[in-house]
Image (cartoon, rainbow, N blue to C red):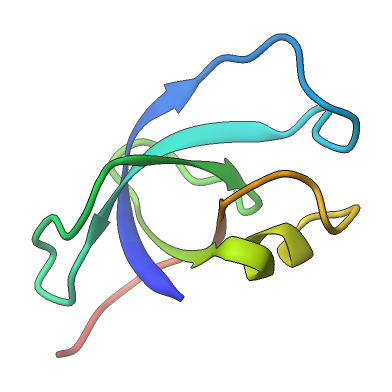
Length: 87
């Protein structure tokens, strides 16, 4: 699990089976001090995040497991909205 900041949205009118109705957001991964830490990525939004929001992300196989149905072709999933980080 890692942190990221939502920086945009993605519009995709055609999707594979299992991702109908899913929302996709552009996310910049950040470290515990809110500094960019990696490449920008697209994540499926499972918690109704909005641009500018600090979020918790899950990657790889665990991202697909967080979706319903599981094992859809995603590499990142937004699984939580962050209220505060104490580092």
